[in-house]
Image 1: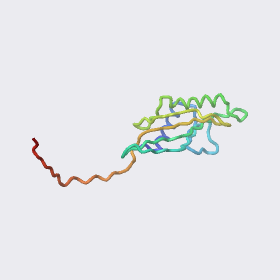
Image 2: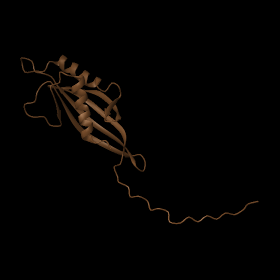
Image 3: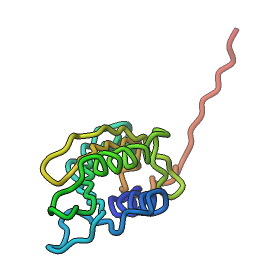
Image 4: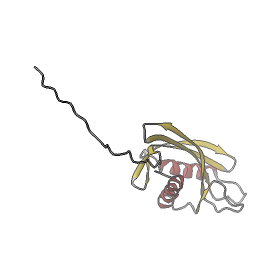
Amino acid sequence: MTRQREILNAIRLLAKERIPEIRRNYIEQEEKNFLRPSLTIQPLVTDYRDSGPNLRFVTRHYLLIVRVALDEYGKEPVEEMLDLQEKVVSLFACGYLRVGDRALKAKVSSGGTERQEAYVDLTLSYLDDRGLEEEPLPLMEELIMNWEKGD
């Protein structure tokens, strides 16, 4: 079973490895005085669909918020913000995110900019077990077979 925490850690490690200029990764809410440049990973919605007796199809949606260092006027340089946004989008260009021994299908798009932030929309889809512990079925106690000779 793939847990939310494992996915968040995989995103953080991938960003840290491939985009060294990001000084800090945050989950959901960042501190008041956060470091810049930074990436905030905000889990949004998780959908579960039935996919068999022991499986379910999971779709997880995330909002990745990109922030760059402020200039001398206290504003984010738009070009730098867009460059960093493109680098975050390119993290998932291969079409999947490796989480442990799994490769979760990734769909990513730039979600635009607003004030001092740029956004990246990330959707991960995968099959997962239900995590149910099954009771073992009782063993067969008796087997009765009738054989008849045919013509």
